[in-house]
Image 1 (spheres, rainbow over the protein chains, first blue to last red):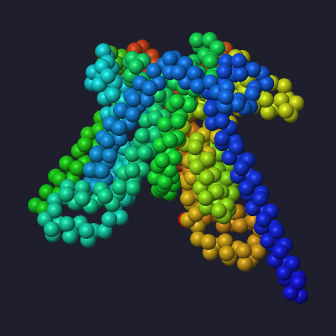
Image 2 (image 1 turned 30 degrees about the vertical axis):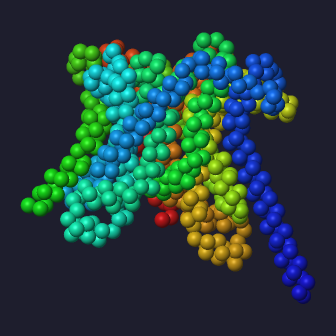
Image 3 (image 1 turned 120 degrees about the horizontal axis):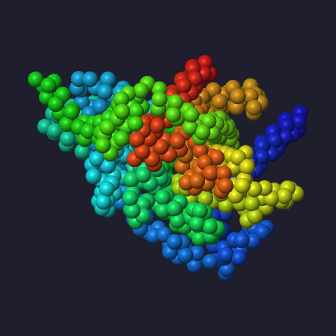
Length: 296
Length: 305
């Protein structure tokens, strides 16, 4: 009897172990599927001309033969370091602007009472439904009218790329949720202490919402890194471009055969900073993404 | 008095955001409606040649690229969204079943990588993966005895180019969905699974009867936002095919609705071009609205809150 029970348990254990093995196998299989494009990018970036244009392709190149010269060749194709600086400048300015405007307005929506608050908030939320393309058309005309396009200086280009993105209804909504979690008692206590609303916002609300602000910063910076359409539309000189535009323009096959090893080296130069940032700030990014998903 | 004060103060806090929103969101909405109903608008002079109800829409609909753009956009949406939602759901369930937290964390990072890459850079990598002679895909197919296929190169057929594009877009969409589903799964009370174990319910039954229903609000959210996102596909096409929007020799065969908007915008100096852009954008908006509405109707019946 005891033996039978024991045997049964063993069987269940074995079944579980097989199940786990299958789970691992499936996860590894899909992980490989995810990794392959990255591997291919890195491998190609390290191949020589002869190795790239070889059929069937080489699946591995020994480290002794890695062609780091591809990276300098890629940098000669286009000033990617300059594009990176431009992108960082745009990301920093637009993120700072976004955080200032959204913190202030989210505070008003979360904490202050004013006429028409809920109606206004509903209207703002409704605009999130509208595809950005509808705004882009007029925004382009607006930045032209602001004088940021014709005879464009670097400052003009930066303004055109940042000012239209210095606020966001989505982040406002996101921050309002964070602010709402601060108990009302703190607000009244601060009032009794003679603190102004602004002091309260700065000393209490902002520190409490810091994780959300961090998340917004990261998401916003990543958006800038990926921005393609708007910068292409408004940057009038090659040297004002951002990384995505620079990368695409430098390696279009309209100019003939693509030097894939140089193209992939450039792609790697553009990709690596983001991955480094991601690995450093993994916790915040993942939290931000899962939270922005839960909001629905 | 005090109320009045709070009112005024509130508007000060709102002012920076509201000023920007008025210029870059509210005004453009009204202006788009204006643009779509005027004839031959010339933005350099700010003049137009009277009003029209349908001409700009008709112009877009008659554009030989329009039906192609609509077909491509629909295909991208209705293939890549369901596919990536299902695959992401499965992967996140498997990930969640990994008992060792460190290993789970490692794979989580791997699956998240596509989210933090540049869509242009990785699109280029995909284009080279699909290269007829030097790509990895055809090497692999070669192992199975399939001779090299021209996926994205000069003269590639529409179907093959679209297949490659769909693989890329599906791949790109997985990361975000996996993260959202995984965080949802980790929020499910373990009691449900304990109860199912006591009842010795089968795995697939547990998945169908517990996991999916409890995750349904998130599945819904992801599906709706992914649909909206997929209708706007454009950068992915540029990443893989460049500004040509198609394989060499078959320019614009991968064109999407958003691409129509930007095509028209590129001709902004031509009278009427901006109105076409506005018409295309409003058509996109209408399509998005209809499908969001349908999605929400379906979810009313299916989603368990």
